[in-house]
Structures are given as structure tokens and as C-alpha cells.
Length: 310
Image 1 (cartoon, rainbow, N blue to C red):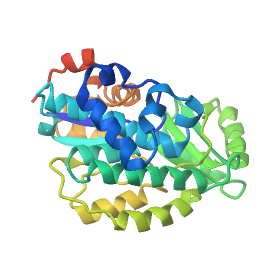
Image 2: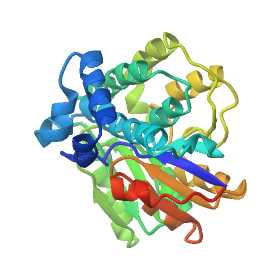
Image 3: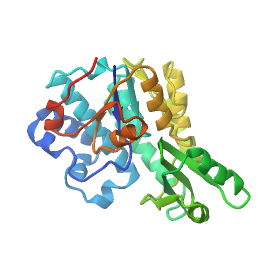
């Protein structure tokens, strides 16, 4: 059994997908279609930068989706490898949109548009310089949650991502995160401030939730061809109505990536194929269970090495 997984924000890189773009008209056509849909040259931003503009959340989100979906389509249509035979699809935060689109639940056009809106809404939900995120390394989530609860009268921090064993990401106002970092260092827990400009996946994103509630309601969802795993619950999504509800809740909710991967493994998955830029999720999956087979696919050489365990 195998699962296909799609990365989220932080995996972007100027020039990502360029070798595939240069060789395959299918990729070129999708890039041009994306430019036409969005009304600006996302393809130029992806291929040539500048990095500062690509790193803007409203650009990063459709850009990563474009790469992930393009690679998925290339694998299926030109290399004749049917990844829709996968037992599960899952994605990390915005990667969930790549998953549901690849599973046929949402159109390419609608996904690009909604991710542009999502990124802009998330970026503007909190003034720049007010919120941030901190990675906590080498600690159990229960210990981190205890520190948050013990200090709830002094500051507010939130677990944004439960990524893997020993990797947790916190969100909050910068002044609160700095107090939390002092508490973590006091008990020798390693932590690093992340280079992001907003506190994603916590209640400070409430303005973005309101925007997405309206926008998601307008979308036309179809029943997916594959079972999708939700970031919000770490469980299977049962129908398109639940999917809509969970995509809105996802903005402020914890990304339960560790729980999602553990569920898929419990259901019998022994192989994970990551489609998109970077190898972040592959690393996280290996930290959760070193016995599963993992491969990150973002070049033609990677595609040629795909060997599926069915």
C-alpha cells in the first residue's frame, strides 16, 4: 500500500521545476494556463524570482501548488504511472489543496484562485512584525503543551504544527513567543525562530478564516477519487461537505501531520511518495517511522526511479 503526499509552505525555491519545464510542453502549458488564470506571470516568479516576491505568502501558495500539480500530471500523462492508485492522499497545510485537486475534488483553476486569496488573507490577518512562528526540536508535544498551559496567564502561544516525533512548530505574537523561548531554554529544549511573517494555524488567523469561509462556500467540489486525510483531524475526510468545513477550520487549527502519517501507516501504508518541491515531508515521515519507504519526486530522474509497492 502507498500514499501520495504534497508539501506546504517553506518548500519553495526560485527555479523549482525548471528542468521539467524546459523539457516538457505539458508543464509549459500548465504554467501558461496558471498565468492566464491569475492575471500575472506566476511562471516567471517561479522560474526566475525574485526570491523576496516568491516568498510572499500570496505568491508562495499558488506557486507550490503549481509545481506539485504539474509534476503529478506529468507522472500520470507522460510517464504513465497512475498515482491515483494510491490508498491515501494527504498534504501539509496548503499541500492539502494539491492533494484534493490531484484527487479530482477541485479544478486546477479554482485551486489557483483560492490559494491566491488564502495566501493574501493569511498574510494580512496580522500586521507584519506582530506575529511569528518558532520550531521546537527534540521534545515531546506533551512537555511543550504543559509549558504553554502553565504560563497561560503570562502569555499565549499555540501549537501550529505537530510535524513529527521531536519537531513541533509554535505560533503567536512575537513578544509571547520570546517569553516561551526563554521557558524552553530553561529546560534545555532547543528552539529556533522561523523566517515567517505571520503566525499561521492559530486563532490570530481569525480574519483569514472569515475570508475563507465565504470563498470556500463558492467552490464546486466533486467527490475525490482517493481517500483524503485531513490536517485538522488527522483522519479520513468522509464527503465534500466535510471537506469544505475542514478547509475553513484548517486556517486556525493545528496541522496534525504526525497523526495523519501514523493513521496511514496503521492502515497498512508502507510507502510514501512526496510530489512537489523539496524533501521536507519525506524527512518528517522518516522521523515518524524509519521502516517505511519514502521518495521525494521533483526531477525527471526522481520520476524514473518511482517503484510503487501496491
